[in-house]
View 1 (tube, rainbow, N blue to C red):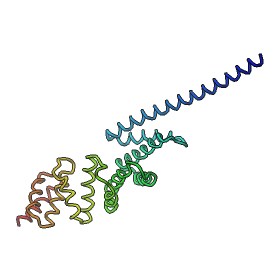
View 2: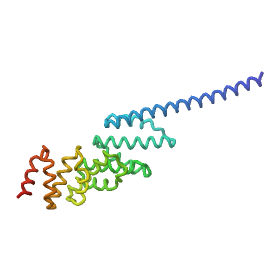
View 3: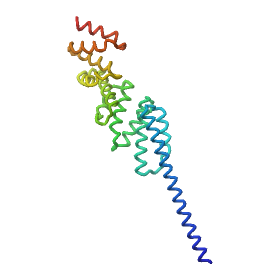
View 4: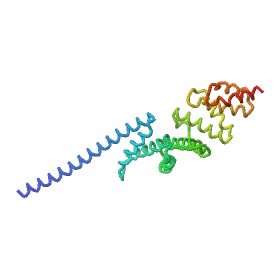
Length: 231
């Protein structure tokens, strides 16, 4: 009887251990599934440019970060820090600069590091710090950007150079986007025309000023330059 009781106790202990391990594994698996579902939903909000809601969702996931993480989790939380910083930049939050700088400081070998330089440049551009914008944009590799980012990059870097009267650097950037019928069509064409005018390339200046004569933004100044060219 004693031996039988001992065997039963041992079996019960083993069963308890296996049960606890299985339960812990199941809970961990469910935790990962919940995290991945929440992350996917946050990315969808981000892609829809709903940056405020996306940031809130990303931060909710980030708050669940355990003290020790497996490699799979490390990648996830690196991505969360990236997206939180980008959302902050897109909404021009006060903490955007520090979040971007923290990412650059902590992560040296990630595929998103050079894109963070783009967003840091974008942040400085939006806040009229054109010297710092140029400094950060120059660290960007254009092949790391998507089409929308390239469009922003070229105009914002071009304009930053323009404010510093570095027209030689600004002109090719405006030239590369001036014919794209989008948000920078009028300003890129105007600044390109202005640089041509400044360089006394009056034929090219006239051609481009006339292209945007219908612009309400530049309606008051374009006739002045056109008159100066004819005069």
